[in-house]
Image (cartoon, rainbow, N blue to C red; front, top):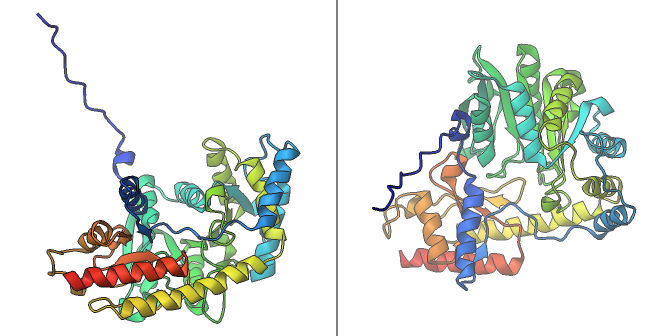
Length: 400
């Protein structure tokens, strides 16, 4: 008789890992890659990644670091040169006054956010989170044991978040307010007055505020602004930044936290038991990026504005699609609800699926960002690719 083979026992995972979902953006990227492997040409408008190469002077700094054998561990929160470069860049651009003990470099902006939220949010704490939100905010809060209190921004007001909207949601259990301006996915930009008022509210009521400034240099309004300039309230807010979008350094993975030394110390303690320091070679490249000429930043920003104007006009010319004008970042967030009920489409996820599998245009459905009627289209690509995407979307809509 053959031996009886018992079925393997179900894997018991922790509650905290079961509280989170895979990234919707990464899932869309993976689905598009499956089609490419079948030999299908896909216009990829999913991931938030600059199409520009990393500027030469940054690459050369990394090569020089390799040749100089700068390949050993550094301090957990980064070298002093890197901390000084982060402080100087932010001070020059926004008038902030941070010290070395108030900055920690990390393995990307997402890592910095994970560290900060882990250090501040405990079980039962409420976190005010504007909708639409970047896919990872909600899951990081859930992982930490917090409860997201969703602030639904108005599409008719271009998804802008105001201080009054935030204040209405504050309760005795509010521990943290997350701001993301310019916003991923909507491209909305908070006014300096509203951001200042939210930070002031947090300061006066003992509530932490995180300002995610991943796209702060891709602000297309008349005035660029950072919460880091509000030095009088700095005891209650943190700035999380990244070099990924600003310098086309997504794969290099370098982000940072600016904030009160007590929180930064806690962030470094957590980081010391997880990743330790950011890659030493990348730190040298980051110093070159921050201390070098910023002309590359201005040039990329100018091209994004040109691409933004083109994609929004093109989308709005397609019957059944409407799109607000994003004021920053490099995403369009068109409303596709007028297509529901046509061709069997019932949701934004259905639209994104149809665009991928029938039009071969990869987008991200809005369910991952907290809304139900949109898709996110990254216009960080060439004008040729955008034109190809628009033509394919137009033809797909016509077949419904």
